[in-house]
Length: 96
Image 1 (cartoon, rainbow, N blue to C red):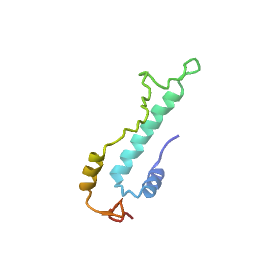
Image 2 (image 1 turned 180 degrees about the horizontal axis):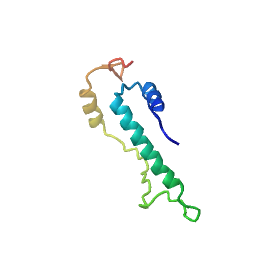
Image 3 (image 1 turned 135 degrees about the vertical axis):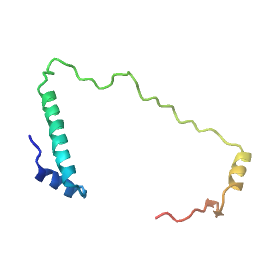
Image 4 (image 1 turned 90 degrees about the vertical axis):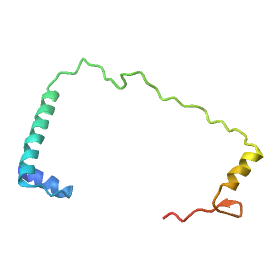
């Protein structure tokens, strides 16, 4: 598959980019080079290759959520540092 100037114009229009003639020419060449390289990769025989999904052996490490009781002092310290409260609720600016 070859990319031509009309396809670059179409992509530029879709992405709302203003490209100069020099940029259009550069992108035609660069995209054709990339597609040529991808075509080379597509010709490689990978039937005997197993799929690799993770090479480093890393796993997600999750910890259990533990509810730690807070003492009344720390609750009061938090309430004292709150800018505004109304009926035991935090009062914050409206978020739209």
